[in-house]
Length: 116
Length: 114
Image 1 (cartoon, rainbow over the protein chains, first blue to last red):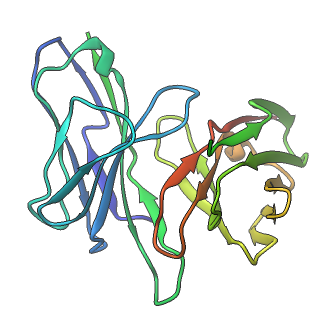
Image 2 (cartoon, one colour):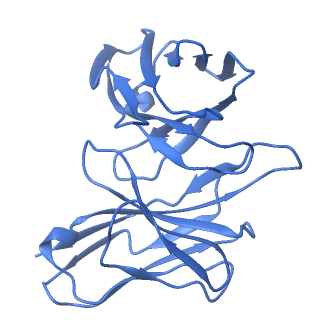
């Protein structure tokens, strides 16, 4: 089982509120990711980080921002939530089990965000 | 354009029956192909990872096959159980052992009825 945790699991908020989705992993992985997923659709990468103080935007444009001050922590923030931000947000981290092994991607349980 | 297409979009089977899910991809260069199981409201969990040189890999009742020439993969589920009800996602990577760019399919929603 993956040791990657997301909070909260569910969040219902009003338009204009600032929110932070938390993500932590205890596997010591340098690489972490945020994906957005709508029902019946594929996952879209919105942010990734290859280490402390390193963050990049992903393939899907997002108004959210991320930070990576500690290896184990990769929070995502929305300064002013809107109904269009309603979605499931999945945090992930990746690492290998040994030299020459294929890098594996581990997901958290996700945060289902609903903006009213 | 690099794409991953899965079929069928949804599938209903009776408990105890077998089923096969399909994944076709156009990703190039190809590095590896992954199958994930995603329960409703949860994050995906890895089932198998296959590299270019592997054409079959099993994980319990799940068996994945890969034909890199035709760019097709299948996931076979044997003796289905109610807990197999989930979305099964095919993911293709375009780089070596380091996690490259990942291309996700939309998943096949499997429902197992008692």
